[in-house]
Length: 67
Length: 514
Image (cartoon, rainbow over all chains, first blue to last red; front, side, top):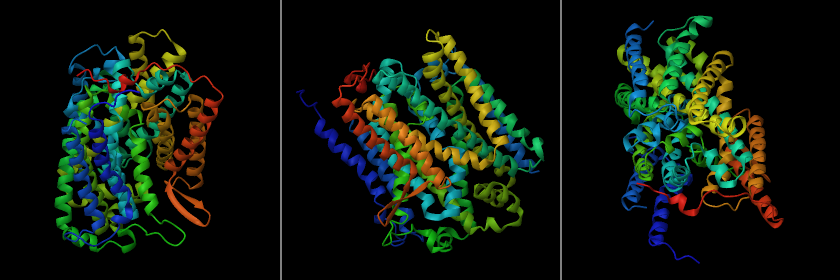
């Protein structure tokens, strides 16, 4: 049995964080609605827009954390 | 004829042609070696890879077809947004492993990896053939993008005369891809992206303002198109289709040969990872472009008699070009159309190079000339890149466009069937090589049948008892493929069937020379 590599727990935690926006995007009932709308743009559209930014930020942070 | 648009268009086209040929001398090396011609020497850094992958993933066809889908079908067309945002964490976690093992063993294609991993030339051949089959219609579709903008500038010659500009554009593309290899699209991608970003920013600021702002535009969208159809007592509505279209597209994308090529051309693992954080800039551009579908609805381009002929010929794919013709000054129409046309040339070049790499490595060298030298490989790959492009051109000129669109959809269904072999293979050899081959066969057959039975609509209505779950055909076919592979692997393992030899070791997948 090989010793677990150092940082394995850290890596697992980061993988979970990385996939939070991923599974949020799959869970369609969460955001298939008009309200709350923003500047007249339905929630469905602006929420997914914001999710892109979150996904990018999380990926960038994972890179910084050397995952 | 729209002369000022045409003049700007031609100037930009000449500029990228010069760049395409100059690229041969960029980071000069011996282009008679496949590693140099077909992978740019594996030396592309963060910035070049960003442009190359961006040019690869966000093609002209994407920029025309996504707004066209939103224009015609509404919210479901927006699936491209969750697709691109789910893509990056997935690639971040999985694909550095492919880069590492390929760098360690000098693999040029995904099939090279499959051959080394499973010791099975047959499985490698299946993956290579799937890649080539899926890529061909994709190249043909890029041509549709060019065709639309050329026609929109007023080239409406009858018969073969109308096709001359397209043939000239493609001949030029073929020539510089032949001489410069992957360096040409890498360099041209920089110009392409600048033009695309300028066009997108102009389009999303100028046009909505002229129409009374986004709030006003959304207020005018029919309520059944604004949101996805919710589940009913006997169906999951559009929810399952939306989610599986996004998920299936994520799983499929980096199995396409042109994506693997751009990935393997990067100089290090961290270049790939860094790019996964930087590439969402394109996702934002894509999401904004998707809005243009609604902008086109608000602008009523569809009922404008000036564009009726184009809509009759190109369908909803004319929505974005029509918007530009209607709201941009003529010279800027030239910039925007050049962005679309050049945005088609970059991926077409990478795709033809990727298909050529596959043919050369996994068919020519494997079966026809095992003792081929590096110079032989490069020579064959260059020729095949020409053949592939001529084939795609002939397809567009002689076969109705709808066939290319249908085949491209099938391409997605097909390429995803290589996921168990390639992606799962990056982690484990538990799945037996024969089980993978049979799973592939079942997935290909079933997926094709499902797509044909639905007249090539992307979603298949799966009936479970009295309940309907519409979902992406490729995704369903993949699930069956996986089930077959798992069950047969259990069986073959119980029978102690020869699993073949593995050229790779676990450390190879983390290999990082930098």
